Image (tube, rainbow, N blue to C red):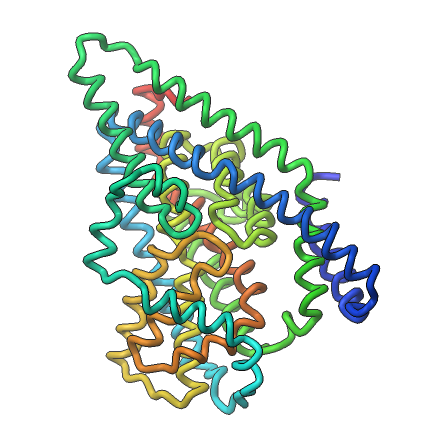
Length: 431
């Protein structure tokens, strides 16, 4: 059986058996299986992937920028990446907000106060993170890390941009050093970075051997804890988010691929289905980064130096699905609490969601503090975030799939035929 079919089987089996076991939560041996078998297997798989994110991101960016700089490509690639990211994010937020205004899923919603009580701890934690959020000016300044090692340690807690900035600067600095040196040979340290990158890929290869079992364990654990309620509650809100994600995936992305990248959208999505399943299972763009890079190079045929640069940046900066989710959530909660947002306020939400989508950490639940910041900005009670916590895990899986797919689409848009030809003609240390 092909690996992606094994993943799908694990996903379906996890939902089915986990939901069935949910009815027997009070049975000691059933709870023990979940606690001592399912939960650890899922966490081991995720930790194996997270373990190599920092060395892979740093080495890939250093190599990518160094290689692109040698061919005068950094400015062009970076500007094209930013342009397409903003365009895609804008479309995603407008789609989400448009659907909320048309279908109004929050109208007539009965607020269950027990939700606030049950989720009190989570709400207080998220609210605390929102209050401690950095100002825009401070966030810009702190993109430059004072201590790169500290940024690396905290990379998976929201400091990934600082680590990426450090890697970008080092890659460009290596290029400037080599350019100014009398010896025009490749720097020896670049081969070390390449070996670190290749070793990271091998770790991914080993981790993927347990992926089907891990996917089953992760989904089983989720369904065991929450039952079908995690998929049934807030049905209309969930339906609007999923509909928006599908439109972004199969309309916006398909059109961009067809008319700009000059690629077949259906073949592109077919070649990417395995990494999309990983994204759905792990709910983390960062955890999927190694598999995304492998897919881009070996299945989609993208130029390695371009795809590594775009995908490593995109894992944090291109959160289209998250931006859409944030826009839908804010307007949904505004409807629930009877807060009538004007056109100007909705436009403010659009801008904030685009920026928040770029700055949201690519880890499970990373969007929740950003949503509260946006809610505070337009006068929606911050405690309302408790209403969507029950379905956030499922929607996190869905929007992460779009985030990861979007990264690959942006890489394909940037790696157009002209750029691809230029990189092939000039050669690449990464190929």
